[in-house]
Length: 302
Image 1 (tube, one colour):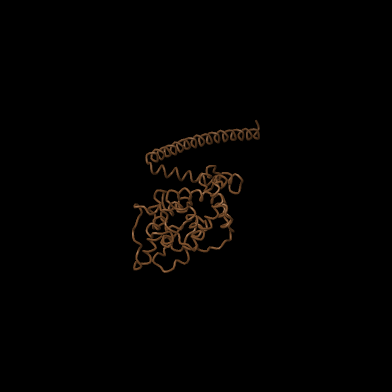
Image 2 (image 1 turned 90 degrees about the horizontal axis):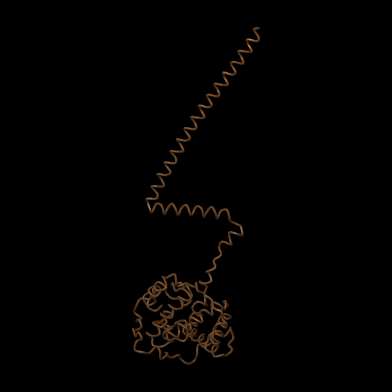
């Protein structure tokens, strides 16, 4: 064998030895990494189990985690659907109609329908919600012993049928009831925020109105009491406007034709107290005297 052949043989042997060494090294490294991975995964798994056991044993913490997780998922979902038709479609709520203050005018009596349509045109509001209020005014008025046209006239003058109206002194809703002062009357309806529910505001307003009329002794004086002007020389024409609008509504209910632009001119004859409000059960507390502070008068009157 020549020297060249010996050299080639030695090189082949060296390559084989190096290949075997590399294979053994890589195999050992692979086994080592696999062991480390198994141990790491086992450690992570043990840590997760420990966390889950701890969280599950803490009710408040579990509730917080669930809420945050749900919120995160909802935010992610919303982020993916922003600007898509599906995002708006998800806002659908079939039961929302149950919260709507609306009534078909066709289901009212002839008198009620005539009043509802006239008010709708005069105050430029939809006839369906006005019809619901007209229906309620007839129902509540019968229970309270008040003319429903008076209730509707007060709503017209006070808020022009805006259920979200609020005065500078805090009177709120359709009948502009002082919510903070009469909060006890809103308790059966779930609280003061019910002042912005049209039907609730009407019912509470009628309670306040009846108290005012009972204390004052007449409708006109009761209206002055209702607006907070019982101890003032002038109510700013409030009572006259309400009575004028009530007269319009009475004529509409009687089948007469009144222009929707008819001016508010107080009737010449005074309005007397209905017999239903003069019984022995009427609250006869005296009208507050003029020497009471203005804020206290407002609290008592409105």
